[in-house]
Amino acid sequence: MAEHAGGDTRQRLIAAAVDLIAATPGEDFSLRAVCDAVGVKLPTLYHFFGSKQGLVDAVVEHGFDLYLGGKAATESSGDPIQDIRAGWDVHVAFGLANPGFYTLMYGKVRPGHSPAAQARPSEILRALTARAAAQHRLVVPSEQAAAHVLVANIGVTLRQIVLATPDPALSAAVREGVIAAITGTGTLRDDPLAAAMEIAAAHPDVLGRTQTTLLIEWLTALAERRSG
Amino acid sequence: MAEHAGGDTRQRLIAAAVDLIAATPGEDFSLRAVCDAVGVKLPTLYHFFGSKQGLVDAVVEHGFDLYLGGKAATESSGDPIQDIRAGWDVHVAFGLANPGFYTLMYGKVRPGHSPAAQARPSEILRALTARAAAQHRLVVPSEQAAAHVLVANIGVTLRQIVLATPDPALSAAVREGVIAAITGTGTLRDDPLAAAMEIAAAHPDVLGRTQTTLLIEWLTALAERRSG
DNA sequence: TAGCTCCTGTATCGATGATACTTCGATGCA
DNA sequence: TGCATCGAAGTATCATCGATACAGGAGCTA
Image (cartoon, rainbow over all chains, first blue to last red; front, side, top):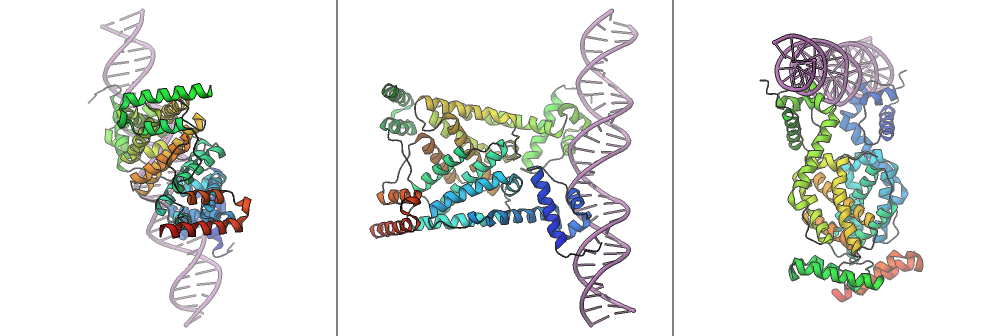
């Protein structure tokens, strides 16, 4: 006995917690199970982490290291918008590959509290939108663009975890939708009928609800006749 | 004593749980606290609900009743896209007003399991996208459009709850971005320079990374000279 | 060697979700 | 009317969990 390996015990506790969390993603884990895995008793764990939340924080920190350590997450293509695309995909891939970490990082919904470590990727994203704004490529404030990207990215990732169904097409669709929204560009459908329908539908007060509905019916009929 | 009011106790247990959950949104609640609030012992609760999850399920069901019961959630404007807009706003407003319910309904991220009651609003949304598709107003499959709207709507709501910061502008921006993405319409920025930049940036392999970067720099300079 | 600090173990607390067993009243049926 | 059945509720108890008070020992320093 008496290894007295210094900081080793602490690292082994984190590693054991990581394993348990990865084994049952989203579920709660027992401190005693962590201790048993390391061969140590509860007070030792409390000596290092003070509380369960302390251990969780350490695990989350480790998770973000893992996330941002994946070289793809930090290297830049030189173009901020392309970097946002790449960052989006890395984000989703990390969440699907590490649902245990991800739910700890972004899945614990409790009003007013978010892990401090979240600030790191958030900061990277803000830097990207700031660069894009400096190139006059955004149609919304840089901060709002960053928030827009983040909420959609987290939303699509959490949803895929909950449904246990990776959906690359959906992720890509949402990603491009977001980028189109913040850059004001995108691939519009070249269809005057469709465009007219949405303009009319978005302003039902101009013609009144009844006439607007009728207008859309007529436009639909036109579209069907043409394509049918 | 001996009220023996039949199903009354069950309802009072649900009501007490609802109060406790609303009092500490996102936090866990104690079955004993629920029982104390009603003046009943644990086995009685277990008689009605079988387990804690049983009670939670009943509460979630009640939450969805409340959500869909809000008249605004079900009445139709006659236009499916407008209904999606309205449904989005009702969704966000409900989440912010009832973070306790909302975190139970959509905030419990655990791979592979989502409350059955979630199917109800999901079904409504699918019906709307199906109607929009029937009017040839979608550029993506109806199912994907529904999923797109849902993940973004949940994402923006959860994020606002976590940050404890309502952000109507962000919600509206994401909402319109989603609608533009699924309908293929939207308000493009009338700026050829910006459009050219995004086209170039999205295809860095055509010119190569170096030349693409340079091109964007030049376009940026042009944009600045013009607007400055 | 005395003393100090850092780890670690023993034992225990209070709270929690869950259950076995019993009690009591209402109801249905002969 | 008398009896059996069933639903509703209480008593008592478990196992587990997060957390803590306290003691002991290893190692270093003076």
